[in-house]
Image 1: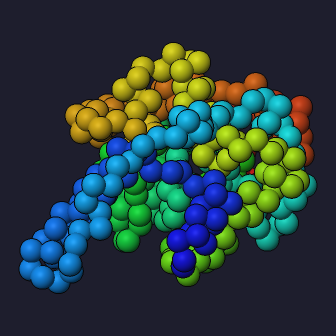
Image 2: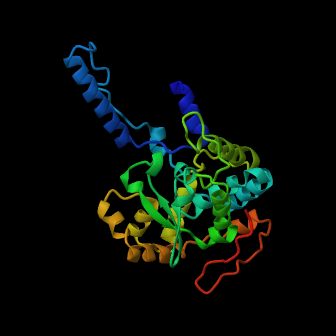
Length: 291
């Protein structure tokens, strides 16, 4: 794929951009390689030497935003009305993003064995097993499944994929030429967001679900290290290690249950916007009839 085409695709899909520091590290690595190539006479000069990465004013102003209640109402109504039954995974994926803060590719590449049951409920295992791609080592984590995902029928969806012998949890997805499960899906989501929901703000993209989740986490006064553990944002391995055992998972579960939104997005997707979820004593809704 040509560079210009790759840029256009990334913008259309609202893919997360690498930071300035990451870009500088990449350039430094390339410069080192080219420097050795010059020393051994493979190339005449180091084209990467002396390149500086400077943020423009537009880049400094640019910021991904959280979805407002109005945004979420409009978007999830548009998803309900636009997504055909055979594409029901296109409803699950943004809902999982909203209730986990996970990245688009992390969700789309989930395998059936990445949804794990334990004594207190279920959790997602976000990992790089079996060729899955993650952003960095701190992206490897466990994320409890929110009760609203159970309410919408996630476990029923899991059992369907298992029964078909599928590796992918969301097995309606068709990977692109680069074997990215999120590729074609990202374009479909962008079309619904811009054309069907009419949300034109460039700061609102799929990655905004991640910001929306973090906003909800701050709203319920979730500790910062717990937030980092859930979204895979901390550079400190000690934080991830702290939540790797059973006790740590219970802590994450407790805080995950406090994540809430004013908009009943599950009710909207089910066509029942005024529906109030029926929850069991442990707080997990038992209905899993919508797939």
